[in-house]
Length: 201
Image 1 (cartoon, rainbow, N blue to C red):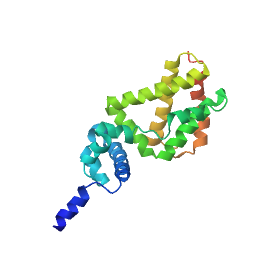
Image 2: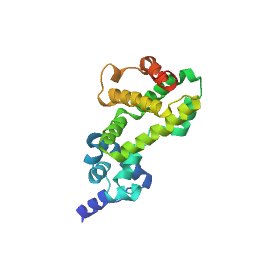
Image 3: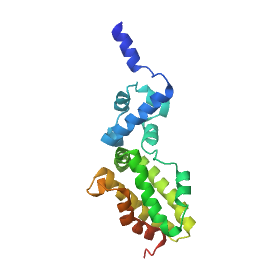
Image 4: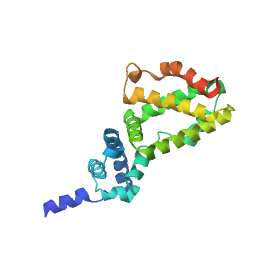
């Protein structure tokens, strides 16, 4: 009887639904980061969270739904971020973008970016969501500045930011991995600024 009670407590829903949801998101970020999308299983995520695997479907509908919430949930709200980035001179856009990118991802923890990149590399759905985000976001940024060739400039900006994240959070090349933010802003922002407003021919 004692064993049955223990099993019931372990497999049952945690007290407080949001506690269960939060535990699943945190566990999913860790497991997706370690195993990528295809290698991560619902059972492994639920086990790490200490809940029944049925809770994944209950809260997120599927592994894909959990992935979208746990991994593609960027450490910022796009509309608020857009307002923040556009608040200042156009010729300092590159600085604001690089500084904000590093500040937000440093705050979220490198493992969140790792999970994003590793899963995007092996899962078309995740890659499509990420592409859509960059295209929508930078179209608004570049369109607001009035620059031409928006699609190419968007791709160039994305390559710089994703590459920077890969080196800092995934491959962890030194000294970039442990550098303070401002020296990186000084070094990288002029390139992003050229992609946004400069000559790209």
